[in-house]
Length: 85
Image 1 (cartoon, rainbow, N blue to C red):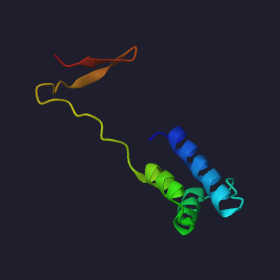
Image 2 (image 1 turned 90 degrees about the horizontal axis):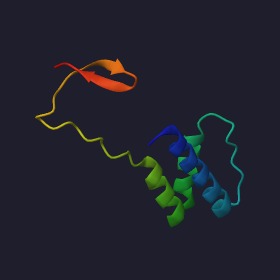
Image 3 (image 1 turned 30 degrees about the vertical axis):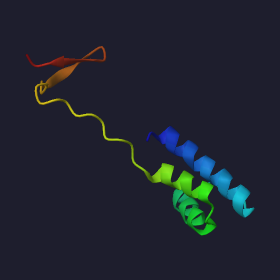
Image 4 (image 1 turned 60 degrees about the vertical axis):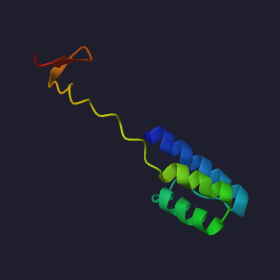
């Protein structure tokens, strides 16, 4: 999950918690993610729990190259890889 997607998920979770619990959460302080996760655990709302699961599940692992394709990248030229031949 990219930083932008993570921040969007945190903001969505924050808004859901504010609606559910009737509180205001300050996003300017450090440790926002931990506080949001603790509040979501205390909330007990299934919608909030779904948002937490989406936030905590890691991205699917990227595909690894096949066994036949183990060429070594020597460098890059204009954003394209240059392979050792």
